[in-house]
Length: 249
Image 1 (cartoon, rainbow, N blue to C red):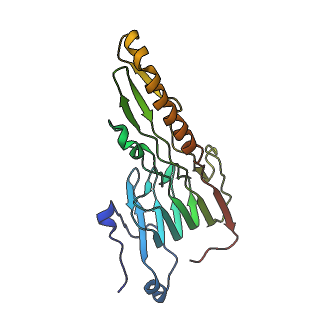
Image 2 (cartoon, rainbow, N blue to C red):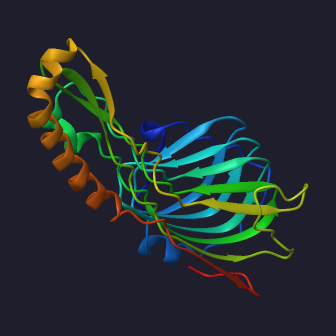
């Protein structure tokens, strides 16, 4: 029996018939992999997928639709017939770090990396599509002693890599603003974070002088360790390949 994705449980799944004809997929092939006949996302709606791999005959995203990838580190998708409206998004951004009150929980303030995407699309209609694999935004934690309160800013996640292999019977631009031409643009940046540690004085000057040395040493060690982690973050790589003939899975 064909394995069916529980898309209703994941989010909204709309499968209105008669709008487009999907290219035919033989029944024997459908037994080999998890196939979805049709994925259609209405205008301004969002569909969340929590699968590593999706194969579908037809993918339709109406204007401002969002396809969100969640709960996986890598995601691959093949779509035999793709129709995308205006300002649509494939959102695979990493989760943001948390805002916490305890410095002992600092690792939880670090943003998660963006998901790695491998997409194979036969595109027959396209408005503009943003593929977002940016790293998660940094959170923050707090350190407090008798002299001051310090906000410890987290670290943004690395951007996810994107591999897009597509066929289209027209030219696709790769700019954020393409003046009404079919367009795909990418955001694979490191998650947003702030460079500075914020300090708020909480005691009179004579008390601050008494405790300044130890607190300063602790903050200095933290800044050094944080900078080492920041330097490990990377922007995601983008690879785009255009096929001259329709792709097969």
